[in-house]
Image (cartoon, rainbow, N blue to C red; front, side, top):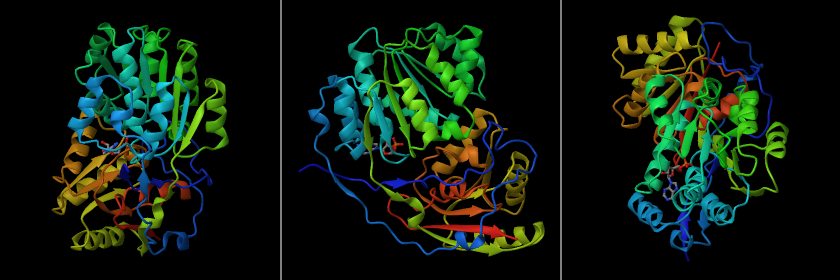
Length: 400
Ligand code: AMP
């Protein structure tokens, strides 16, 4: 029987959402006020979750999609569908609206990417829009769509902030049949009249919960309002709270739901606190931690763009291999920092919460919270970056 070995993790269920919403959450120099979190909640031994052995009902060969897609999947080394792919693809190919409860690491991108590529290849009137909360996630989706649809004869445009308009305008003039982007930049193009969505009849909202967390609800609603009313919609979200349900109810027709049963990723992470008060003691302790040979690839979280930049510079001055990623950097700088971290050329990535969202890097050994997260939910999102792919991760949180 076909089996696909896949460990699935989930982020925290609903909890208090501190820090409000709004696009400026990772923003400038303002100190934000979050919920009080008892430091005891940052201390916990890892209870490793068994890897889920998912028995796929289908092979990729069973899916009736354009043969070029089969070739591309084989070239990508995809042998068996993951749970979310196995269950989503057949229903999506029948034309159903889909709700996928799944997060990064489950293979959700190909779950919507394969049916969309098939539609674009086989139906000349098909046009798809994919909306993601962050530039990095949009870029990752674009990479995946390119490799799934390679040679399929459709063009695309990636509309994200932090990059110049020039190449986006050129791509839009070429009448792309797939547009991938973040809500703000998509909205920008709609307002300039450079993107008309009335012919777009397939839509994916990826990481809906995060888009709502980031204050994109109005942008997302106005984007959907402009689309062809006769369309197929895909909604993917790690959590299904009432806000997410409300949005889906407004914008979908008889959706089918696929939920990837998963544990809480924080179970796979050894969590502890580091007591330090004052900047110099914190720096000294961080320095010692980073010298520990057990510490491999690390994400260090800090609060604001400015503090992230300062901390990264300080680590570089101390001889560490570090880089910073935050919303104040250009898209090119962010992508270079991320690529270098993925390729292990940089060992330490200092990040704000928002900039780190959607980052899929498998081999992070430690997450260090140099400043405390705004909410327990943010904490779980942060530490879920370690302990991926069945490995035990470590999380250290500085407390005063
Ligand atoms: P995603 O959750 O879509 O971000 O995918 C997580 C990672 O799993 C990505 O690196 C994908 O390329 C990879 N992946 C997705 N589906 C499969 C599959 N069926 N077989 C092997 N790798 C996969």
